[in-house]
Length: 245
Ligand code: CA
Image (cartoon, rainbow, N blue to C red; front, side, top):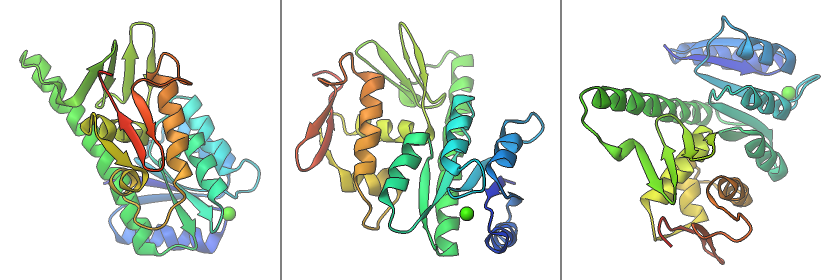
């Protein structure tokens, strides 16, 4: 059973969420502020599979909570709740390390679908990792779970990008975006396609969120991020990944 932490200070909404999550078979806990959330998530006893995190909280806000989690190398999938009509919240949320977002007010079925998507992706990643471990035990190499280019290896199972000098931990969505680009090696992918296929977003989302992620990925995979060779912008369309430029 998946455990979900709901961080929301509007008691009515929080209790409604808990009730519905439990009705869907999740185990749900509610906290009402940012301090309690970080305590809960970074403490030793508690283990959660996903977090529904409101931005506007008393004291420490949602952006701070997710930044602190990532700084502490906690990569629990985070679905952020943003106020309607505030694309800057979305961008800031992704930049802080959130994996997905939902504008308020939201439809409960959409929240459940998004949460399920996040859990499925993270379980898939973990399952993949376990399958690889089994394979390496039998000495049967399979590089499906990783991809190497230009002295770097993206490990989709460990959510890591390794090079000779460093290991960078990736968030779930950074890893999924890289996977999508790598799968389309050499082909142009549009921002819309990325939003639909990586985030599962079909609504008219501000595509600057993608650009923000691309800037971060370039810092990870390019020797000179200002002059990219692998992750190229295709003006007016989207991006193209080239493993071997
Ligand atoms: Ca709030």
